[in-house]
Length: 308
Image (cartoon, rainbow, N blue to C red; front, side, top):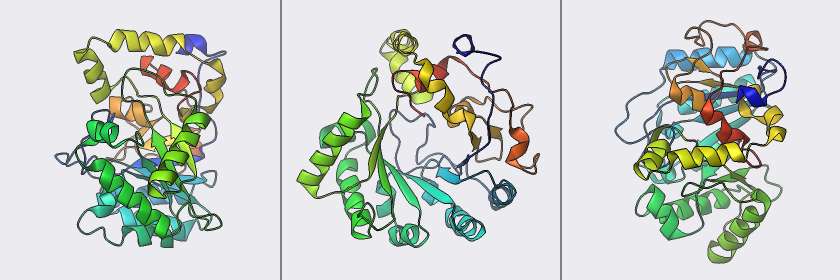
């Protein structure tokens, strides 16, 4: 990718987003998952590391968004502590929960929707299609029905209701080795289908390109499609996406506290410096202008209309 970037290559700007992956345990095991989460994973962020992330947040005034992901982040024992403390430290902070929707029906999560509402958490939920067949094919039998029930519960709590201030966005990713369609048109289709068939509201749809790493790369390799997919990404390189790729203004923290330029580098183990951790810096401002580590998978964020 560096060959397509003018100047000395990609470098970090001011950090605006602190993304924390607080654990790989998930109640689902989706075929496209670049994190390779599942109910068998045991990696979880500790209370000590979560507290250090909060200290970094407190000492990094440029950060405007705390993005909490996993796995199913809500199933980490320290998820609610992180949300409450972040809201207390920074009342105007945008807090995002990357939600798989079915977690709302897990035992012990009966009050999760109310908790998210009380703390003004923005929910970004993955729903790869508005078709039951396609969703269950990618995510498991019964997932679509449970996802619809979760979306209805969020709507009932006020999410995506005009004037509520509670934001609910959906994420689409392709079911195969192709690029996502144009975002605006697909969003209109999603809104029409979900509203007409289920009475569901949401604010925006984000289209994400599947990254050629981990489970999706294995899927492509088994089908003999990995090389073709990489060539598709390279052919569709869009120089206009470079300034908005996530690694420029996002710091990604792994469950063990190690720091990365983005979530995808995190999964590949491409760390910043020599295994830099959240315990090695006082403020995220120290990371400004660091060179960003790139590789072939980065074409996933720069293909077509971009995917960051």
